[in-house]
Length: 333
Image 1 (cartoon, rainbow, N blue to C red):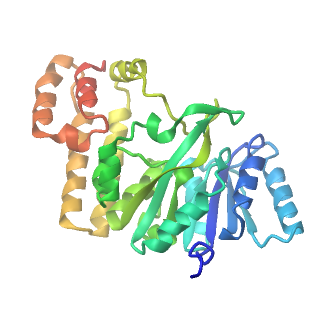
Image 2 (cartoon, one colour; image 1 turned 135 degrees about the vertical axis):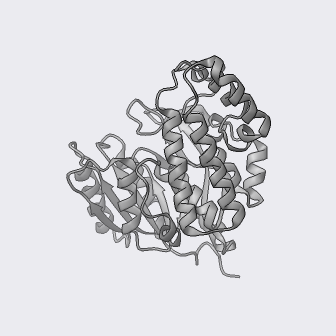
Image 3 (cartoon, rainbow, N blue to C red; image 1 turned 60 degrees about the vertical axis):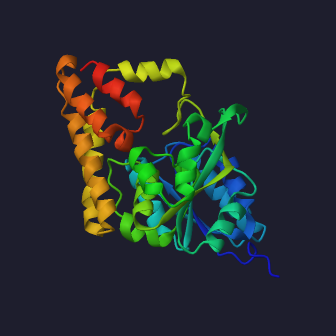
């Protein structure tokens, strides 16, 4: 019987860079080590001022010299796009049916593409697949934790996603890290353009869940490097961090969430999925608008917050549920 992985389609890799000279070489080599499963590596550079692109070009030349069929394509420019828009131009330039996302400073595990391709081959309805990652320090040394552990991905959420209920889960909170994502290129028809107010991976995941099926692999697909210059990192879910989060000033966070929810509602309305999805996303937008408009006075917040809590809105729509109730009651203006 033919090996399904050997017959799996080739993948486009969308890799975004910005002043990543220290880490880009091992990242590229970990992608090249995936072999013929990679058809092309699209490198979108956001105006690097260090040797990042020189290193990319040198590794591309080395790869070609040893007979690799993997094509390198570099999208450079003056920069200033930001992470979301830089990833947008990277994925828009990809040519293969399956696209894998990559950060400039992580290391792919040797079986990353094999594991993900097997899932896409077995599931024609699968639109986007993500997974776990091992956390490592700037030198690549394990930190003793994983993304799912740090994000507190619970068994109920995992089971719901496996059941095809990813939209409900992701409407509350994002669990998808772009460095582990693979998706079908057809998703871009609904997802483009990416709103600047959203992070690319969150947007791709929620749109994929609204228009198709999202699933996860309970495997560590990459070494996810944590260092001082991470564009996007993770924070340990310690009690001290949770208390700090509850008591930090409200700032613009709630207004940002309200804007993001409104933009999602507008896109979902345009896509016209099922009535239930439209109803749910409108409820989310209304809830986040409510939180953004809460009064500065803690006393005046108490009654409206408790009403929403008893209605079930915090459990349906807030990323931290009961913790977000405390946050809305206690946070200073």
